[in-house]
Amino acid sequence: PHATLLIPGPIEFDDEVLRSMSHYSQAHVAPAFVETFGETLSLLRQVVRSTDPNAQPYIINGSGTIGWDLVAANLVEAGEDALILTTGFFGDRFADCLTQYGAKVTKIAGEVGSVPSFDEIAKALSEKKYKIITATHVDTSTGVVFDLKTLVETVKKVSPETLVIADGVCSVAVEELAFDEWGLDGLVTAPQKAIGAPAGLSISFFSERAVKVAHSRKTPAASYFANMERWTPIMKNYEARKPSYFSTPGPQLVHALNTAFKQILARPIEERIQKHTQVSDKVKKAVTDMGLKIVASEPKNQSHAMTAIYLPDGIAATDLLPKLLAKGVIFAAGLHATIGAKYVRFGHMGVSAVNDERGDIDKALNALKASLEECGHKA
Ligand code: PMP
Image (cartoon, rainbow, N blue to C red; front, side, top):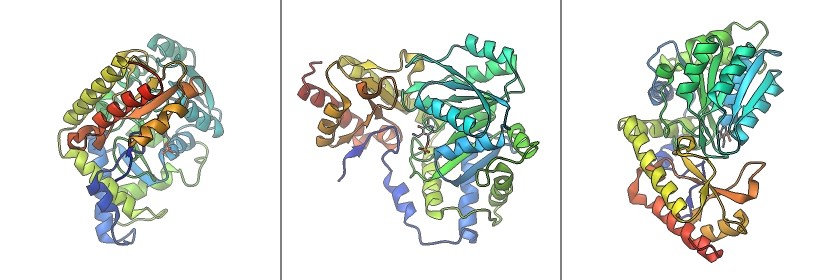
């Protein structure tokens, strides 16, 4: 038995996912692995709800951050403009990554807990030609969810040639998402959050026009490894069940991801989203009933993956977290420059949300209530 990991990623693993990692060593070009990898790429299409054969999935070694490198090194050339919508720490980091590669970054930030307005976004897009616009679907530092569907609609109206890129690290497999239908150009994610597999991979998905932009640059891509022109043929080969090599994949991680994707797709994805919504509503009601305030300012800004919770005056995260741990529950400390020590983050996604038998959510809510009382807070 171990303390239940209820931070906003990495999350608890399902036993079957964990077991699929203990696979004997395979060559990255072995037919059985080529089959697993190819299938995993095809399953990713289903997870992001894309049926467009010209859209391209990528699964490469690394982590969520490498997805930003892919965007910054391939879709933008030095000196081109990028508009970054930020709702917390991870939006700011995405902006830093683009700046590192030479993009001219303009940021629009919401107040802590809220989102930038679409009027402001439309205005910015009408004033300058942006090569890309990025948004964090769920910012893991604040638990704020961004309305990507309306974002794409807004961009298509004002600046249809601008590529719309989403950071879905904390949203894929928990929030509603429809890559083709919404008209997204890029989505970067990682296995260790709602997908429910171990960290160590960068998972991304790009539209045909985004791939074309990456493959027709005036200047060479600004990264050797995070290089779409190098990876596109490799991914196409694997999906066509042909061995291919640019850099060695991690077969054990791919096996775990394959199992996690199959678990996600075993039931209609709408059902999974609905379950996460129910669990999230329950958590948000319970913490509000305890007299606590949620960082995401209003229901439409609140992610279903996690809840960032302000602590009562006089109680710091460093007081509360050890008391939770003593009850077998791990929450995360705050991760936002302005509100840092005043809040904690509760991740309620993946197996902890979909598998009621585990009892993770009730255990966490009971532990939170008891720990707050020990800290002197009366609900
Ligand atoms: N984007 C978001 C929204 C994240 O939550 C994270 C990680 N917490 C990242 C990007 C970076 O991912 P990684 O830590 O796997 O590099």
